[in-house]
Every structure is written in structure tokens, then in C-alpha cells.
Length: 121
Image (cartoon, rainbow, N blue to C red; front, top):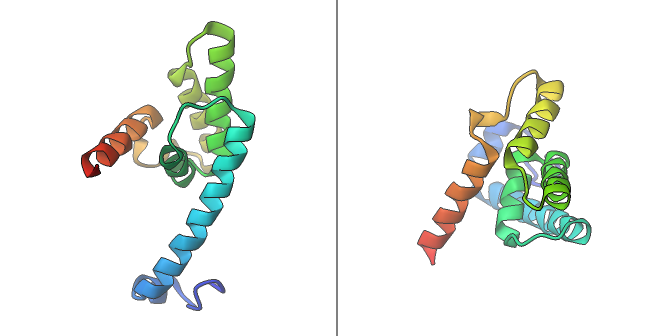
């Protein structure tokens, strides 16, 4: 909570300025993560989508997801979203004992997010 100057979650939730400060900080971190992904993988994905994935899965699991898509695309010619989902589910299950938050498939989450971006244009 040093970054925002608040001392508790309750205080944070009641302080829009602290929330904005933290969101700006996260945005900077997400942009750095996107640059790292782009240096590793051949991605035809908007930065906003990669940032959303990082927010949804965390950087480690986003890397795992993208690496699986990249390797299945290189070996078969097509990214295997089901395999990538399985790999990330296994990773999250090992860490937390449960599946992805909200139990929504990653591909559906991406589609929903992308559709909302298009609606805003």
C-alpha cells in the first residue's frame, strides 16, 4: 500500500485517487510485460488484449499461455487454444487448488474483451 498512501483495502476502496494511482502503476507494468511478450513470440494481437490477459492471468500464466499457443502453432500450423487452456488450468490448479477465476475459458474472455473494445470505437 506504499504506492497509494493508504493503509487498508477498505481505505483503498473508498479512495478514487489511490485507485487511479495504482491503476496507472499497473498500466506501466502491463506495458512492460507486453514488450517482453513481443520480444519472445510472433504475436498478431493488440497490446490492449495482451494487457487484459496479463491482468486476468498474471504475467507468468500469460507467458505460459502464449508460449503454448506459439509452440502448437509452430508444430501444427495452428495455435491450439484448448491445449493452452489446459496448461494454464494446470498451472493455476497447482498454485491455488482451483481453475481459472470465474471459470471462463481464456479464448472466450479474449473474444468478449475484443468485442467490447470494438463497441467503443
